[in-house]
Length: 138
Ligand code: ZN
Image 1: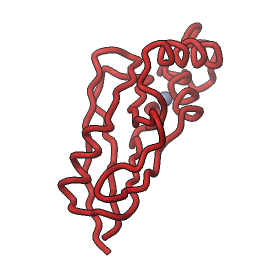
Image 2: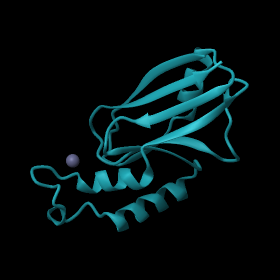
Image 3: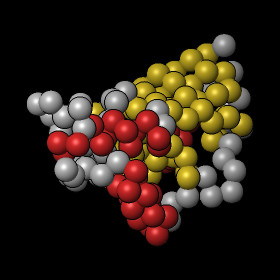
């Protein structure tokens, strides 16, 4: 069995962002030479997510509204975690949007269902954060 590990770095201009990283993950799979296996992609920071969904801007605005309804950023004093920081909402948003995805690699490509794309979800951006990509297989 072969394995290949790489890290993607993100530094978003905005506090919240959704970034389609499917192409970057596929380039890493191509580089790995692995044709059949599994690809793990996970956010390495507890205020960012990796998730799979549609690359459709209306849906992304719906996610923003839904997440802000569940865990509004303001007032920051409503959260016990905000004791010297103000990112409790980002921890909660990350938890509901998920830490990682695992996608099958078939014939050297991500074996997506219809419309599936991999996104990096940032909830407390404007600083550097990492995503791990690990591929195992043959
Ligand atoms: Zn925090």
